[in-house]
Length: 110
Image (tube, rainbow, N blue to C red; front, side, top):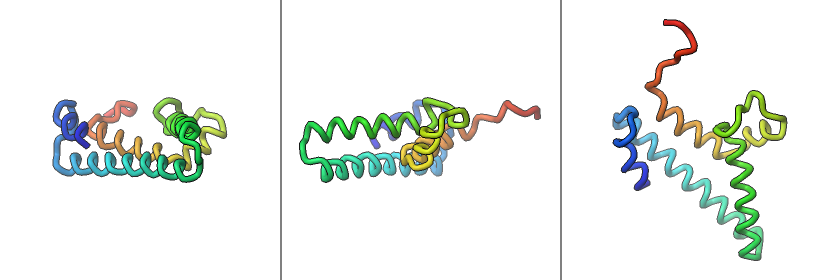
C-alpha cells in the first residue's frame, strides 16, 4: 500500500481520485490473495520448509498464467485453464486496466 501511495504520482497515469481508490482496492485484493494462499498452504502442509516450496510452486503457476508473461490466446490448454481460475490474473488485469486506461487504442484508425 505504501508503494502504491508513492508510485501513483511518480508514474504518468491518470491521477484522479477514482483511479487512486481503484489501485488501492486492487492492492488490497492482491494482499488478500497472497496472504490467504500462504495461510491455506500453512494449514495444509505441516513442514515449514515444504510449505515454502509448495507456495513457490503455486506462485509460479499463477504468475505464469496471469496473462502478463504469455499471450493467453496462443497458450496451450493447461495455461488457458489455469488462467481462468487464477486469482492473480484478475488482479493483474485490474491493475493494468487502471494504469493504461488513458492510452488510446492505436489498432484502429480514428
